[in-house]
Amino acid sequence: MNMKRLSQEEDIYRRIYGGLAWPGKRSGYAVIVGEERELDHGLGKYPLRVLDEIESSDMVDLIRQCTGLDFYYTPEMWLGDISNVAGRKFIYEINETFQKREAAMQGKRNFRLSHSNLMGLQNAFEYMYNALKGLLNQDRKLLMLGEKSRLSSWLLEPRPAEISSIRIGDYPAIEALSHAAIELERSQFRDNTQRQEVADSDYNIL
Image (cartoon, rainbow, N blue to C red):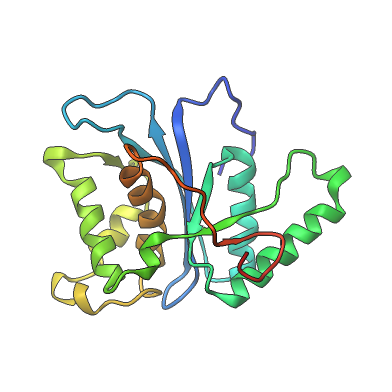
């Protein structure tokens, strides 16, 4: 992960979203996805690109790494599951620590996690997996993962016959990518409405 903050001059993306999935059967994962400024006229949409990714089996470490990504990329929003009480509490505690060290943490901002619309779907993983396959389809490819991305390997792990029975928490890497990439793609040509559920300075749902 780059440590130098992304400047406005270097920013070539219309929007940047972060996706976060808590540790489950496998390590937790976070992904940063950028929406490019140049329209792909063949697709009629703006291409998406994975800019960074991290993983950790430790929830606190995962959030701390996310704050580094947040500082560098300043995404418009982070999306994930805010029903996880432990996750919300740790976000609150880490933000509180930053506030106490304000003088030494210039440029830091509270880490805010918004609730992903995907979490309320029935058979959520099945939807995520198939939606990502559509974005990655070679004939109409909208999402680029990058040569060194581990996400390509994670996407190959689930067996087709098992997709419908896979639950949230089984493949955090796929979930994190879904939260950022699918929301960016779905929201390209609709007005964004302010999300009402956010984990931020309080570990209760706001």
